[in-house]
Length: 283
Image 1: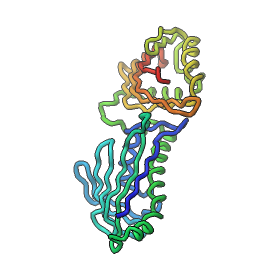
Image 2: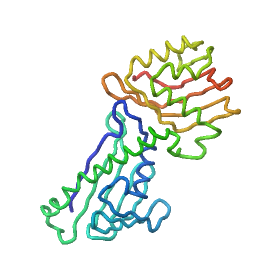
Image 3: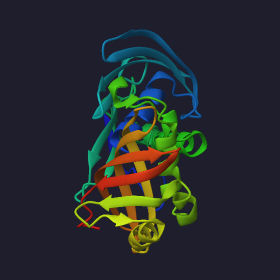
Image 4: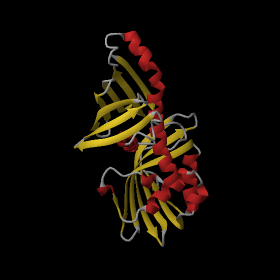
């Protein structure tokens, strides 16, 4: 049996940040229809499904295979070859590196009927496929990023229906403006007398104070990207609450992620009070 394992970082400096849930969404898409992600695959048809699994028939090149795909939510997807000439197991596993940054590990343990017990022959057969499988991992991440970049973060489903309420599109637009690092674009969403409270810092009043506080933070970084895990618009869209994981790209291209909660109060469609709860001491 030929075995291979490769681990890649999910996020890179100054790119759209993908959370564990974001990547899981992409892995689910690939499991149900791999054709957009694996050019060599000519067929991918789900023939049966149950709680936490699907059974699919695929045509990889000219090789017909049947796979049972099992889901361990936001942890691992297991592809078990249950019929065909290349039995074995493929796994996509979400993890973290020593700094806590999200990783995606691709591994397989496969054999070829007629080559069992011949390690050199198995290696010669499967080694050329390594690039194909790794490209499928890269294309999955790229497809999720493309969805966010082209259609907005709201195009990705949240983990639960309870993670959203009301017409929360303005919340997503707010963070799009923030992630652009365009201070004028962001300032335009606030009233002139906006109140900003960031963590335990004193509350600042007015756009000039907002500019100094947020501009000072942005002067420390090269990029910022929010992955929103909850967005609630309340009281006729006058109050908003957002939960997110935020990735900052430092000047030296290292990454720093933090969980944040932001509470908005609006007046006549603009943010009049914003309270950001996040610990940036490690930044």
